[in-house]
Image (cartoon, rainbow, N blue to C red; front, top):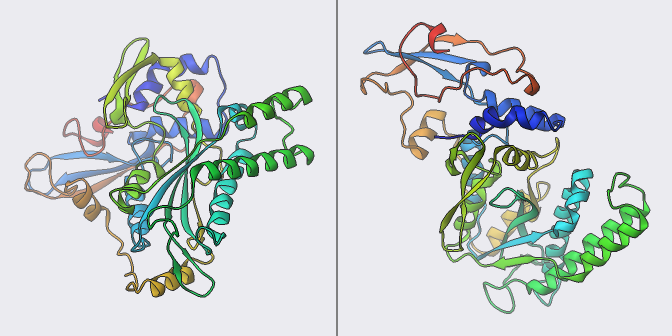
Length: 406
């Protein structure tokens, strides 16, 4: 199967000959190429029945690596499901116009923080309005920066309970319909107004010195363009309930813009991968020059310190324990049980239906760790393009001394 690491191996040198990587991009690049290889070390396991042995290498755990994050993603999903209330939920999306992409390239922290803040403030203000709910909502937002074909597309997905907790401790359902929150056109205008006000305040405060459209003329042209159309806000009550939307979001919370499963093939010049063709699950193949594919992927490596998942209202970390307890009392829900912590072996057994301790050769013996395989003290510089041969975790090439398989 073709992988993102294969793409970087094949086209990385050509890309790096044209462009420089930022520090977070270089870190992600090194991690993806080293993931589950001898570079990160690991241990050698041996079957206690047939004697078969192989190396098991460590994962990089970088949030941009498509091979990592499965257990963290599942833990996040289980934690969120433990907070789900017995009410309908809405799936919301707040999108920034592409006219702000250049500003994001120069000031990513400011753009992302402002996107989160304006989306959350918009929802909280609508929820506090007695016309709609008149209380405090429970919502979570997750950042995405990509389209299916890896273009830059800044937006946050949200999951929000259809209702709010009032000051007197009652749960207020939506006044128009149990599954309807707010009109999207009104959300769009308020969201745009808040972001534009923040943008104007930042300009007056000189906090965007590297804005590529910072001259007065370019600033005015961008401002007119941003006001020309309503900004895209999407809202829908998931037909399958909150678990459906949470499961959808969980696929991205601990993954990157593209998974290895979507990459179809790599040839001497191009990369082909699957994208959605329609809202009904249809797929089509996109083929792109390999160096351009790498450029698009690198666009989505987030700067250091950016939180992709944020919680607000009753789910804000400082008030969540008390807030959720009040909501459960108002809805006559039982107290949530503490979440059990699974072992790695139990997780693999449940999610992947894979017993990682079973010998893959004889199918009867149990694998035991017999040696530690040390990691490199420092991963190679991306510009040197010197990496160990990749090896798929838990699928050894052959039995032999540690030096042959490592």
